[in-house]
Structure formats: C-alpha cells, structure tokens
Amino acid sequence: GTKMKIIFVRHGEPDYRELEERSYTGFGMDLAPLSEEGRQQAQELSEHSLLHSADLLVSSAVTRALETASYVACATGLPLRVEPLLHEWQVYESGVENFEKARTLFLGNNGFLPPNSPVQYETAVEMKSRFLECMAKYREHQTVVVVAHRMLMRQFVPNETIDFCQVIECEIEI
Image (cartoon, rainbow, N blue to C red; front, side, top):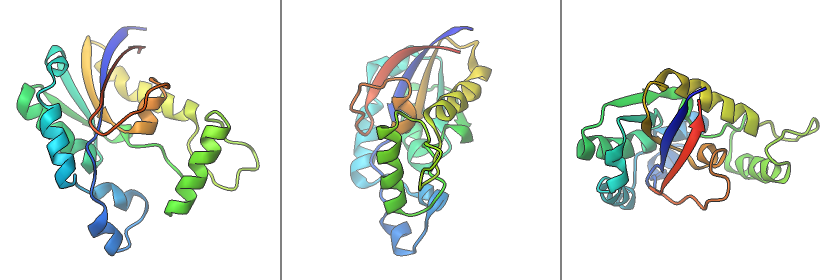
C-alpha cells in the first residue's frame, strides 16, 4: 500500500426544509443545498491554509458536500474529482426514526450489524472498504482534500467531534 495524507473536511450545514416540505426521503434528501450558515462556513473554510498543501480535491457527489467543495476549489484552484461512493453511511430503511435507531445500534455494536437487527445498515467495515476502494485510484497523489460526511470520516478519525466544515488531517494506507 501507499501512504496518503488525507485532509478530511466535513460539509457545511445543509438546509433540508424544501425537501422535507415535499416529503423527499432516502437519497432524495441528499439533494439538499447548504443553508445560509453553511455557505458562510464553507466560505471561511476555503481560507484554511492547510487546504493549499494538497494537490487534489475529492468530494462526495452529495449536494451538501459538492457545494462545500466548490468553495474550496475556487479558493485553492485544486482540480476537483467527484466520487459517488463517498456518500454518507447508509441505512437501508427510510425515515428519521429508523436512521436514529440504526445510529444507536451502530454505535452500541461498535459498527457491526447484529444478526437480529431490527434495522439494516452499512457496517463500519463496509464503510471503510468503500472509502479505500474509492480512493485507490488517487494513490499517485500525496495529499488529498476529501470533502465528505461525519460517519464516513469517523471510521478514520474515531475520537473527533466532527463539526460542519471541520478540517481533520490523517494518514491512510491506500
């Protein structure tokens, strides 16, 4: 494997109101843009000096991540690659209550899926391998900014509280 320096950035605050009003669910919610506050966060993020040390910007294809990445791309001039597989952790039943239930189960079971789980969800191992598989094509790059999602980031930086537009550096074997 190759060591790659990853500069993780969580997306800015999204605004789900319009989609909620129209009863969108599941991946439909991923169409949500940043809120006014989220755009402000992304604007401030784009001035972060660490981002300029990278040679590539990779973003989740989810709107809130992609919109955040657009601020970074404009400020740094980094080439942008969009990756559909960098989406957030998946819960295979829709609805907020199922998501919360799954989150509690995921955390309570250390990322494993118990055989009798009432809600099906992506395990920590599946999430991690999805990320590594996705990033393998970029292994010739030394430092990559990755704009993604909290649960996905947490598989690599487990002890952090990960706020909107937070920047976290780590080294990963790809």
